[in-house]
Image 1: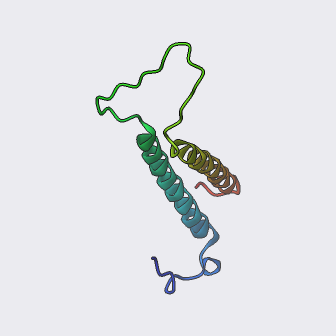
Image 2: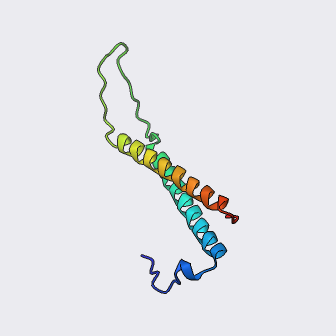
Image 3: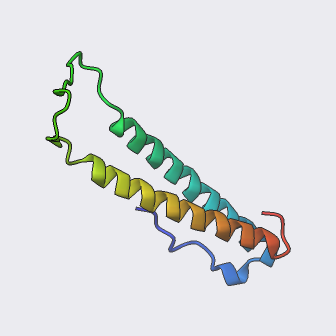
Length: 100
């Protein structure tokens, strides 16, 4: 866990410096979210273990053996929404007068 006890408050920094610090942190969060999204995508890829999945043609029965994919899908959707909001925050910060 990071210890910010010795970090000076943003109010004591120049406005440009504090905006740049915030923008850098937002970019870092976005990058970490993108890594998480790639990890989720990799986990959702079907494994190539040589097994063959077959179904009877015309069968109306569907058996779902994967109870993890819905959770991965929900996590991915939440990360995408959060990433969009962080991107919007970064854009708003950039529009406030300082290049971010």
